[in-house]
Length: 512
Ligand code: BES
Ligand code: MN
Ligand code: ZN
Image (cartoon, rainbow, N blue to C red; front, side, top):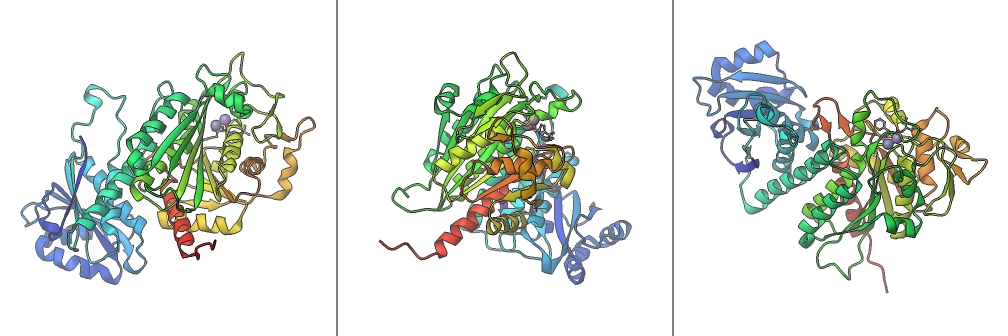
């Protein structure tokens, strides 16, 4: 069932939903927020507050039974938002996600969400995004009893503002952006027998044709075309599979902007639809998780779909290198040397370091588009997960100002990303006796040498590499993320686009 989100301007306790979730600030604002609720809910609220020691701090939840009160809901939860003065958007997204999860845990099919005693510009949209992200479940492969019997069907966003067309549009946009992120999750969660490179290309193509009027288009370079163009690294990684590799090129330009000079950006994704490790095969335990090795590609598809909603004044290229890394008589092997699309020769060291190879060719293709910035994102190294843990991605950049902009964008998006250094001393690890480059260094600094390898293919173009190996998939629900594919990164990239658009708008127009 499709989730329907509506805006209502009623007092929260009068919202018509089975479950009501209220965001409550901590500190001095706590009392003020609770006062009107205590008036209506009386001793049931005071008792529940005492029992749970609820203080409105971030992450706290107080479950209030509300039988016999004037509340319309059968169950109310108070969720802590923390200090009112430092409340930021991402916390409201988390509140929305908390609300839909709480409702689902009770088998409720309707939920209402409100904040009490606290207001933030854009809250309605953020709540809608959170509701969708929290309600997400992947049930494609479930049958019979294992299918949810009580999916969330209706959510109310309670506002104190006037419900006009503009506000409704914001909520609808929020829902569509979150739907796009859920598409990334779906692609990651799909079984690798169903999602192979050409299948991924079909999804990308469909996303673009469905949003043609919003400015999206897509071309796919099939295997023969890749070989003809000399994208030998993508070919090398893909040759061990019965499923051919492809390069997917999605493009967004705001409708009717043909003659306009717009900032031009590229977002690149690693699309390894399954990573066995190839001839350097991975150990069996946990190998099934490598169906998510196209998380970067999934993010690019989702991000492009979201651009159709946000409609930025920019030209944006979404580029995906998709291949399946398999062992086979035709597979590439350690010691092989290939000429990259860019021209440098690369000696293969470990066939399990396949991501940087497909990205190298995709990055050069992005450079050829003449963009002013390239961001690539990839489930690239276990080393990055060792360094930062499973919930934080690491980003690298060849420009310090760009790194700062990515850090700020991640902060606004509420996504955990940490700036990592391109340690120049480690570049020596990529020297090869036989080719221009080895594609793997030794063990230490594994995520850094991977980034240094990628840097070889971006020339002078300002570039960011985001290693999402940890947070692209989750083994439990947290923040706004679901178990399995998360779509971590997409919100940050959307923020970064906003930053580029604003920056170019504030620049004086070129003369002549
Ligand atoms: N896809 C993996 C990286 C990965 C690991 C992603 C864990 C998500 C979770 C990548 O292709 C890989 O195998 N990397 C190797 C590189 C090594 C052979 C230099 C790794 O990290 O061990
Ligand atoms: Mn690998
Ligand atoms: Zn991989």
